[in-house]
Length: 102
Image (cartoon, rainbow, N blue to C red; front, side, top):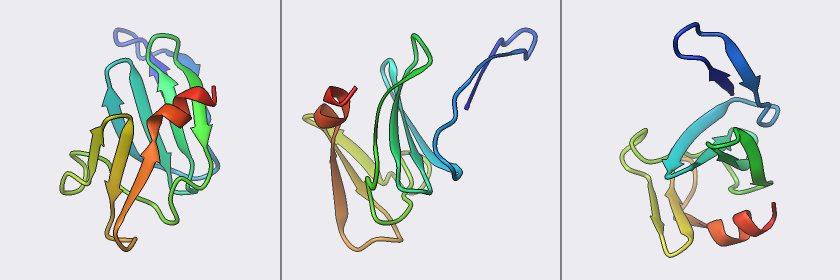
C-alpha cells in the first residue's frame, strides 16, 4: 500500500501488507481495515500510515468488504460481520481484540 503526495504523485511511504494481494479495504474514521487473500486482516492508522495491529487467519478464504461486493460487511458494537461467496455463513471479527493487539 502506498501513501502518495497528491500533487506530485511522489511515494511518501510504503506499507507491505502480507504476501498476497489485498482484496478488500474498509475505511472507518481514521482506521483503514485491509484484508488480504492470505487471510490476514490489518488495521492501519490513517494519521500515521502505520499498521496498528493485524490478525492472521481472520477468515478461511478471501472476502470482500462493503461497497465492493454486494454490501458484504457490516460493523456494529466493535464487531465486523463478513459474508462471502467463498465461505458458508457469516464470519465475525472482533475489532476490539484487533485494536488491543497493537
